[in-house]
Length: 188
Image (cartoon, rainbow, N blue to C red; front, side):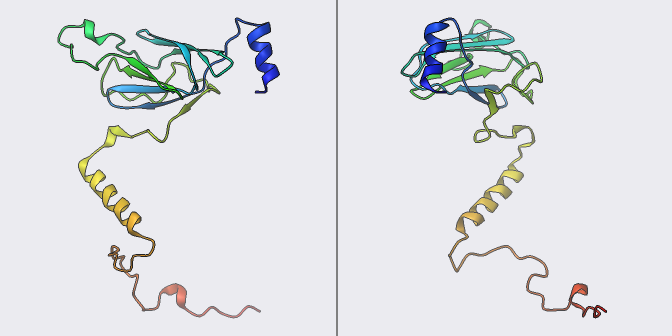
């Protein structure tokens, strides 16, 4: 957005706010949302059972951001208040850096998958899935991970090392004729 538009939004319409761009990902016990706002000030994050409200001033021109999200499932905004949960780090919380604000929402029901962040199925242009941090934790198994680790190691070793042992593929070095090696009849 060019500076004249920002000037109009901030100076001529001081109450106008725009949602901050955000990325989210799902884990077994938490949902993470990263609001991508550089040089944020006056950050306010309000965790409610089924809603998250985020606001701040961002950038050198103090652009106003406001995001209100009706969540897909309930979260546990203040788990310390419940008996038996006094461990540090179990609350829904947020952390501000120079480039973004990361919110950690403790799920109301641990182990329940969230296929989307919002209650409504609407596509929000400011919200996207953070595929760099996404992990399909529902079908995790040690065997699958070890196979993946071996495959990753093999791929990392490819690219010039002469003594890399690649797994054998049945028929890869077989010099016998296949049915597709037969001579084709001439076209008329």
